[in-house]
Image (cartoon, rainbow, N blue to C red; front, side, top):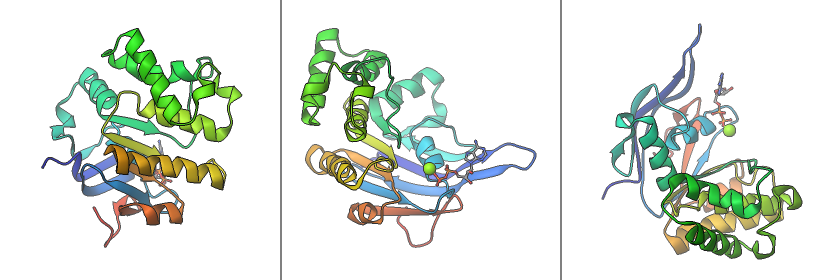
Length: 228
Ligand SMILES: Nc1ncnc2c1ncn2[C@@H]1O[C@H](COP(=O)(O)OP(=O)(O)O)[C@@H](O)[C@H]1O
Ligand SMILES: [Mg+2]
C-alpha cells in the first residue's frame, strides 16, 4: 500500500555564509491510521521537519512523497492544492485570524480549495465545530474564547477539507493540563474513530507514550532506535 508520507534522506540546509543544517538524512514512512509523536530536545529540528512534511518549506535534498506523489515535481499551485486537500496544520499558537468569526476561520481553507458551495461550507463548519464542543460559539471572534476553545477551533480548521493527515506542532504546548488532555483526546479520536493519521510534535512525555509510534530527533537526524 502507498504510504501517506514517505521520505528518503530528506535534508534541509539553510544557505548562509556558514550553512545551517535543520534536517539531515531523514528517511521515514508513515501510513494511514497512525498516531506518530515527534520528540527531541529543543532545537533538534522537530518544527523544521513538520514544516517540510506539511509543504510549508522545501527540502534542499532527498525525496518527499505525499500520497505517493513526488512533491518536487509540483508547481506552486499544485503544492497549495495538495496541502489544502491532504493535510491540516495545528500550531502551538492557534493563529486564527482575529477579525474573522470562529465559523469564518474554519471556512477559509474550504474557500481556498473551492470544492464546496456556500451552503455546504456552512453545514460542514457547523458540524465540525459542534463535534468539537463549540456549538454556542460559531459567531464569536477568537478573542472571545478561552485558550482551549481556540485550539479546538484550530483543530476544526485543520479538518476543514477532511484531509487524511493532521500535522500538529506542540498543539498542547500553550494549554493547561486539562485542556491539553482534551486536545490530545480529540487527536487520538481522529485516528481511532475517523481513520486519520496524526503526526504531532510534543514535549509531553505522557502524550508521546500514548502515540502508536515515536520518532526521536537529535541534531536534525532520526535518533538510532526510534522508528522512522
Ligand atoms: N530560519 C532560521 N534561521 C536560522 N536558524 C534556524 C532557523 N530556523 C530554525 N533554525 C535553527 O534550526 C534548529 C532547529 O529548529 P526547530 O526545527 O525550530 O527545532 P525544534 O522545533 O525541535 O525546537 C534550531 O537550532 C534553530 O535555532
Ligand atoms: Mg519547534
